[in-house]
Length: 94
Image (cartoon, rainbow, N blue to C red; front, top):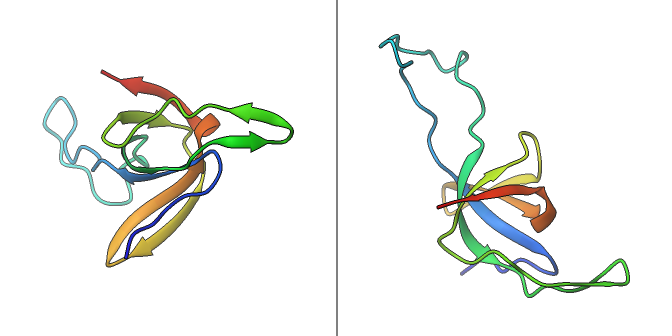
C-alpha cells in the first residue's frame, strides 16, 4: 500500500536532526530542534486549487526545507511522514 497525496500536497520524510553540536556537545532528545530538512516521497497531481491552476514543481527524491510546524504528521508502516501543501515547502536543497 502507498500514500498518494491529492491536489497540491506532498508527502515528506524528515531527515534526522544532528545529535551533536559543532563543538561536540551531545544533545538530548528534548534539546534537539524539530528538523526542517526533508525528502519528498510522494507528490500530488496539482490541478485547480482555490480557482487557480497549481503546477507541481517538486518531484520524488527532492531534498527540501519546510516551514517549521507545517503539515499533518502521520505514521504509516511504522515510518513517520508529514503531508503538507507545496506552498509550505520553502526551498529545494541542491
